[in-house]
Length: 245
Image 1 (spheres, helix red, strand yellow):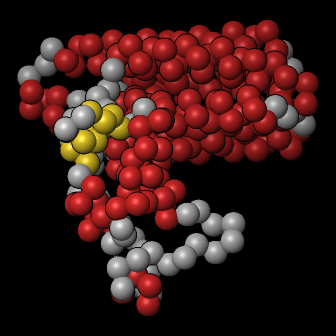
Image 2 (cartoon, rainbow, N blue to C red; image 1 turned 90 degrees about the vertical axis):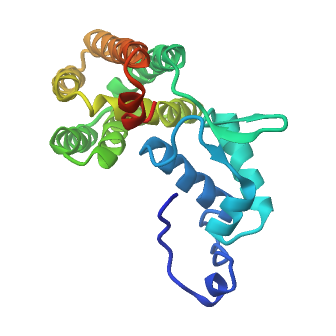
């Protein structure tokens, strides 16, 4: 199932997580984060059952935080529940990935238009560092995070907290799809090149060019990932299973 790393304490020895300190995440949040990560990285595959009894034993908690975590993941689209069947990992869907990236294109372009006038030398240097980290990343499990950090750095100066929250939610929904990009080295290289062009436009304070690049970048990524999923559906079952589809 899932590998869990946690220190062994008096609380964990009795079968519970330690009580989160003020400002730290709750047990439910910790479980949902670890399940989400397992789905993104393919350790939990589409259609796989998520049995509450098994999860409660695995995480050494009661059923209450398990139910709450599954409800949270269902609201985010990671899990689906059916009567008399329980919760299962949601399938990857070409239509969904296309829609997610259409929404990201609209919202991130809006945020970028607000962000560019507010960018400083320091914020642009920070964004450049995130770009380099993403382009040099060779660990598939870290690439998605690096990519998200670069996009977040570009729009952070917009100072639109509700808009940023909506974008972050879409990033979470697109994580497991973006993981597919790393399976195609050519697609990642093209993405890195577009990221560089995007940052250059921001440095030049050219909002029209920056938003045009952002829109094309995201819409093309969504379209390519959707096409990849459509084609993979036609592939032999062993290949689909190897790709977590």
